[in-house]
Length: 166
Image (tube, rainbow, N blue to C red; front, side, top):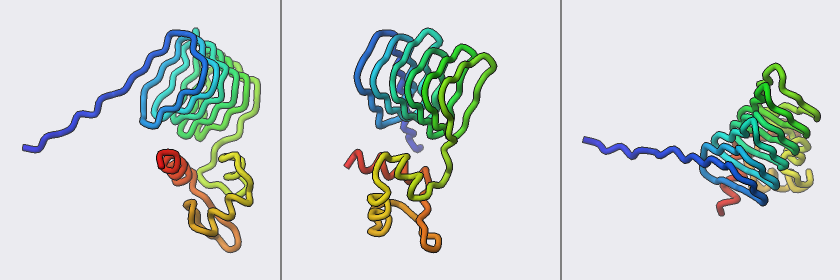
């Protein structure tokens, strides 16, 4: 009889006022119901409750906003804005779901499955010359198409996470 390892669901429910940088390297179900200010990087699901007030740059997989958020949002898989959401800032989602009643003040640029060198440089916030050097030396996952490089978003996200751990 084979033993199966049970994977526990990691849930963090924050109903307080916090400030700083939160970075989750493993998937969690994070819910913010209070105030948060700073930088937030998550894997898994992030829910910002309808009474929450968040002033932060947020990067995550699945992000659901029901409260007030001010800052840049990057959603690698999906961004959902509930009817009570108020978002002030730019958003870069792979997929976007906006409920009637949500308020958005800012720009939206959909996250592509593939980047060229310039797009990847903006995504990683580095110089294009660094991207081209990494691609030419094989330090970053890339595919050459003629004279140009093509970068798959999921492979890049995995590479970034792997490099942070190293």
